[in-house]
Amino acid sequence: MAEPREKIEQDMKAAMKAGEKEKVATLRLLLSAITNERIRAGAPVDEAGFLALVQKAIKQRAESAEQYRNGGREELATKEEREAALLEAYLPAAVPEAEIRTAIEAFVAEKGLSGPAGIGPIMKEMLGRFAGRTDGGTINRIARDVLAG
Image (cartoon, rainbow, N blue to C red; front, side, top):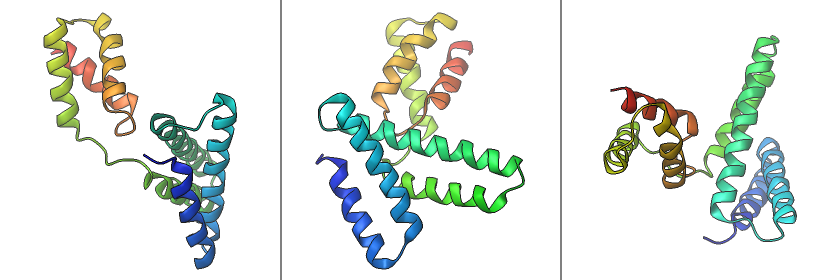
């Protein structure tokens, strides 16, 4: 994959021409995060790093939306949710939970895992396998269900 920065810059130019100020601002923040990560790492951001940055930005917006809503600021909560939706377009399609469950069941059978001690190895394997296409909370919930059942 070419560095994600290029696609975002193209999308930002198109948004500028179309007068989509909110999209431009959101993409500028994402470009800033990519630049900061590139400087921190001393190398271009790879696909996994990019996905992690996008997921972090989406999570931050979801948390902000919740706080705004709790504070009675519905218009700001809606804005945060629109920004999160814009960023979700940069993530690959989500993996269905049934596919995650099947993968976890196969991994548990292959490694002979059981009980709460099996969560760690499952999380490590599945987060790597499904990076950017699901979140850790979903994997953890399904893993606990599989290990309990």
